Length: 424
Figure 1 (spheres, rainbow, N blue to C red):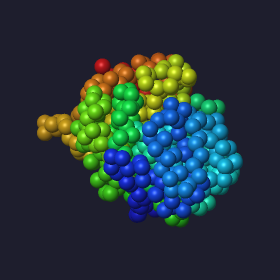
Figure 2 (cartoon, rainbow, N blue to C red):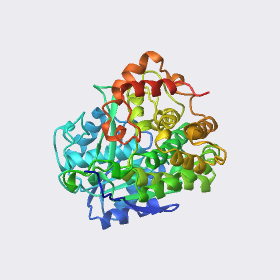
Figure 3 (tube, one colour):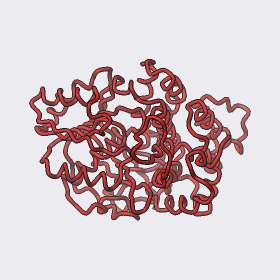
């Protein structure tokens, strides 16, 4: 029996320049008296973190700082934050940072509220995929990047060090109660970080729009088993469509001129729009393929990122696979892929349906070139000899790969990774 229903869930969103100063009021309204503020070492003394701590304390909330988040977190870094949270007896969480920070706060909140073996809540087949037993503590997310949209989703992603791949925890209960979108908090984002996170927004929206339709999935045995990532649906399509337009029209300006407040504000909103879309519809192959790419980082260090460990930023690892994927999936729904290309500014009036994938792929490649992203997987250290390991790392990512509108077996994934090695 096929699915006949879908749900739309999202966080409460507060947007505006300077609204970070209201986080104390918002957390007090949620009933918290002792809050853990989660961030990474590079942001620990930043204005957004300082402002959050002051705002919480001004409302009489005992605010404790945890500043050991690892950019591109691992199971080890998650467990470190979890142990800190379990020892602290916190009844609220505020994350200040990018997706790594927001996801770390989600994991700390979950395991401090409902202690369990680490793999119990992790997505199958890597983990057991146990449902979250009930509500977690209030969490307010304050993003400092315009990318992951994690402030609107119930997903926490990490590198599983023993497998050299990414996986995650996905459940509606993990979604923050509120996302505070303050354009002031993205002013100091390095150019490559702005490019990587911004192109992640684009791929979130494109994957949401082109995912397997929700009514093509098998129906769950009971409502509690309906996944957070349900497939493309009419409401997610609205959010994804607007996000694609906003990213395409603003990302280059936002990267080239950090003082362009209008462009940065548009990118911050686009990240949330895309998050609402994919947080309910899901993503597919570009993300599923990205997880072993990030997990197998051995030497690459992009400018503007921490240099204490090799790192392939999440958004970069996603977008480097995207053109290859959309060439592959376009045959399932050429008109939808042409629609996505039009949203990116492509004149598709003379484009045949059989060329839909090429048109969308070229639009993505053009943005990659304009934003300074490396030319495919080869440019970040991969060779054809790595393809078997990349395929092995992508195959278990059922939560997302099964939402591809065109099924991808091992041979298909190998061909896709080959196509993603170089684009120009």
